[in-house]
Length: 129
Image 1 (cartoon, helix red, strand yellow):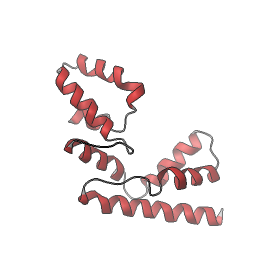
Image 2: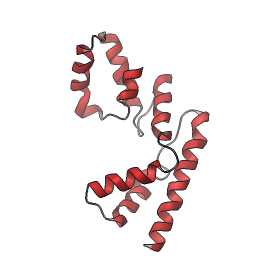
Image 3: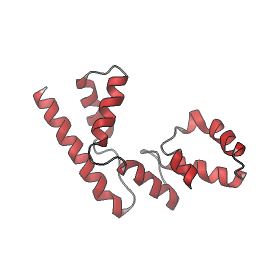
Image 4: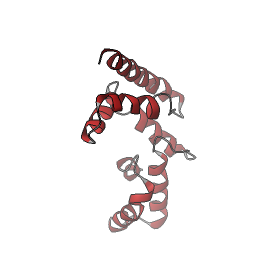
């Protein structure tokens, strides 16, 4: 499932054909390609996950990067797209805060703490901006 980990969070509609071709060029069997793509797509934050591998990768995707990762990701993505700080805060509040959950009990607390830290940060930023 190493390939699925490389492709975690990938957008199914835009990249499926390219990924399939890439994996075929690597000599991966068709049956394995289908499983790799399924697990990679299950790793998306909003995915409805059915496989154990998908649950593991999904939760790893949410827990990745440590405590400050949600903050950094929101700021970098938002500023890169030309969003204002107010728009970035609103995006976090509407699209991220409380919207995702981990499947495995081992990762629930990790993500909860990470999300709470980001929530406190953006709340403070909003109050003092």
